[in-house]
Amino acid sequence: MRKPHLLLAFALGVAALGFVSRADAAEYGFSTYGLGSSAFGAGATPPPGTYVTTVIGYYSGETRATIDFGGQIFTAGAKAKFFQSALSGLYVPEATLFGGKVGIALTIPAGHVDITAGITGPGGATLTRQTDGWGLGDINGRIQLGWQSGTFAHLIYVQGVAPTGRYKVGFEPIVGLHRPGIDTGWSFTWEEPTSKFQFNGTFGFTFNFENDKTDYQSGHEFHFEWAVGKEVSQGLVLGIVGYNYRQLDGDSGSGARLGPYKGSVDAIGAGAVYTTIVGTTPLIFNLRHYEEFDPRNRMDGRMTIFTGTLKF
Image (cartoon, rainbow, N blue to C red; front, side, top):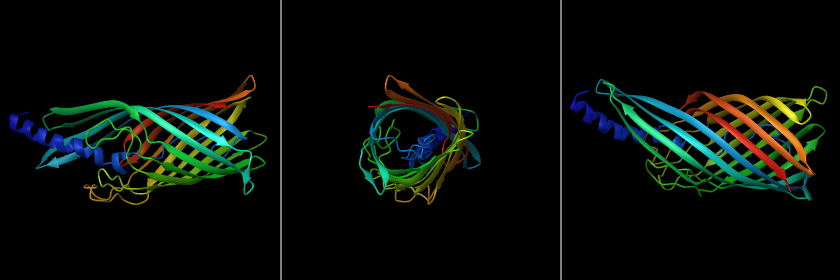
């Protein structure tokens, strides 16, 4: 590539690095609600007590766009890797409300992000930037109310997200999105008593507030998560899991310089749940993996989540 083209590629590279952080809807291409966090047992509220869950997750994804600049074609893209961990507590009191069990939860996440962005010119020369770092995530609190009727359990919930995570405007290793939000929805779990097949689902809506650091208003979102499985032995359930995400309205605000983007993505994968008792203490392990497909204005990736829950 000749030197003038290198200078042009450099100028476009600066623009592209901003592009890959904002072209995906909602802002940064991610939701404050963690897709895949609801699967087996989605609609069940456990017996009264205090439950502590440890969460470990890993996500890797990429996004790519083509830029035509005066007949010269440039390819801009980004790759992101997130290691996530969280500690979540759920308290279920003895008292009931409207005939249902109340649950109050608090989740404190943390993680490491590694982002690489670059642009490739028509001559093959590539310019890249990379950033990574650890930090606290966006803390969220949740209240739910659940009911049980035979083998059918369901609940309604409201979850609030506070912008507490590591955040700085620019090409930075952000762990939080600095986007307050409220997610509300309905979850269900039903098991067929004879075959031990179970069906689980969560319908949710996320209402986003403006990121006041960037004046970016992400559109509101819908998510449906599901899990279908069968108890193959005492305490062990195997099955398939997935989620479907749709952004309901476009991004807005002075910070949404690329227009009213809407995002969508689907995912499918495998999951397993194992429940056992150590002494007199119930212990639940949950493992699931998702492969995303048909992304629109979002990253295309894959995610693995492991959780362990202990009752006190």
